[in-house]
Length: 116
Image 1 (cartoon, rainbow, N blue to C red):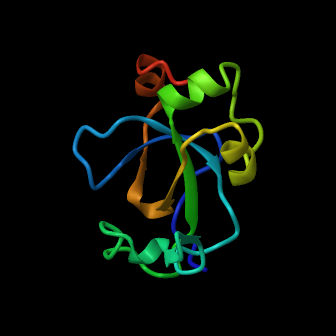
Image 2: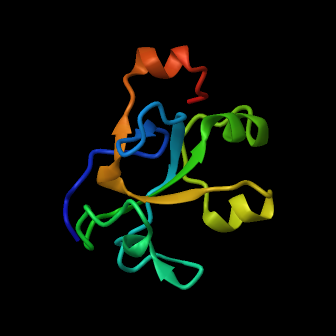
């Protein structure tokens, strides 16, 4: 697996591929690559927009910050949220190649009202 990111659980990010993308929060960093992590029987590596990233990129699980704030108002990023826990609570989450995510600096994160 490549060492392709400096993300941590709780990092506020945006999608490098989408101008003006909404802020999201990294809630899990599974020890899987985008080639290993499957969504609806398809590897994350095969989803549109991910072709430019190596198959051995780490997976980052994110929840958009407004959804996360409603589901867990006091979430601080101090511990990962499992996909099972997110699913049980009815929270939509997304798997990205970690290098596709751009960390947002703390001031911008605070300005967007992201809970950390």
